[in-house]
Amino acid sequence: MSQEKARIQLVEALRDGRIERREFLRGALGLGMSVGTIGLVLQACGSEEKPADAPPPAGHEGTGPGPAPAPEPELGPIEADLHIYMWSDYIAEDTIPNFEKEFNVKVTLDTYESNEEMIAKVQTGAAGYDLVCPSGYAVSVLRHLHLVEQLVKKHIPNYANLAPLFLGSVFDPKNEVTVPWQWGVTGVAYRKDLLGKVPDSWALFQDAALKGKLTMMDDMRDNIGAWLRFLGKSVNSVDAADLAAAKAEALKAKPILASYVSAPVKAQLIAGDVFAAQLWNGDTMQAKVEKAEIEFALPKEGSSIWCDSMCIPKGAKNLRAAHEFLNYILRPEVGAKISDFTGYGSPNLPASEKMVNKVAYPTEADMKNLEYNEDLGAGTAAWDQIWTEIKSG
Ligand code: SPD
Image 1 (cartoon, helix red, strand yellow):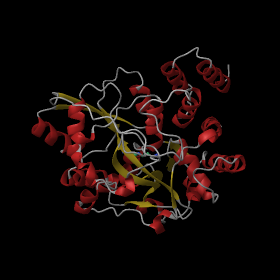
Image 2 (tube, helix red, strand yellow; image 1 turned 135 degrees about the vertical axis):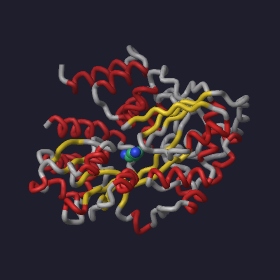
Image 3 (cartoon, protein in one colour; image 1 turned 60 degrees about the horizontal axis):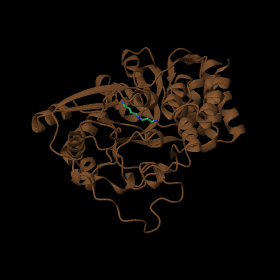
């Protein structure tokens, strides 16, 4: 059976109530469905159910007086353990040891390379994590799966340090489940000594003279998004002609690329095996610490901007420790050290002012060339299909 047919059968099984949401998710991830599509299907198939942790429908965020909010629960004393699951290279070296010492909590840190990897693990329910770090669209999927806890804000007084720019997002309009962690942009990391030019266009990845020395990210939104911008289109376009044109550009690049790879490409850039890679700004800055010849550029056609957030997965055992950790990382000095290590911007306003290597918040002028990835709605399925064709083409 083709993958496409298997996907259709899986969606029908969920729609007809023959399988549970969790079973659907397991199958969907196995069939390579993107988290955007999964969220969309779950939303469509569970529309009669309105859990407290589900995002409100578009256009209804925070409107109307509504019922008075329920009093926040008591969390009890801090536990002895805390299990964190986040992207690799995304926290300063002393953040966890200092927290362990001050709060007498043993912290375990596991890492992942994609939202899909994280969601697959969290949805098993057996992972035992107390904190995860999804990108915006993955927050939406976790909420649709009822896999996030509401934050108990009285235990996070430092929430007030967050800059308004990063609050009230479409994924968490009432700031109920996320603590914004780091923000950044997607662009090009390059070895100025080996490339011999400043990359100014996504066309770099179609340069036959650089065959085998270039990589692009193994990420549908970043990859197709770049080719859409190259064509003068939005990273959120769902227009069939735009997507077909983006696919054609991606396929021109494919034989030139050494591989599709995300954060681990840092080692190849440092070694000089790769001359230029589509990458995020912060990971590029981390690589630059080890190899000064590494630089970052944003192609003139524009790119995407994003913000990852901390969330507490449903059923987390160490709720008080998770809240204490969230409040701790929102201290200005702690937040500053995290972002000085990661190379990303801090959504924590006083922390961003304390950073040694300051990353200024995006201005209106910056935003003219950058877009936040949005929920693709019904167009997500077309993106999934095109990404599968690019990868297998
Ligand atoms: N090394 C950690 C990088 C985290 C990047 N997350 C952003 C995903 C945007 N698509």
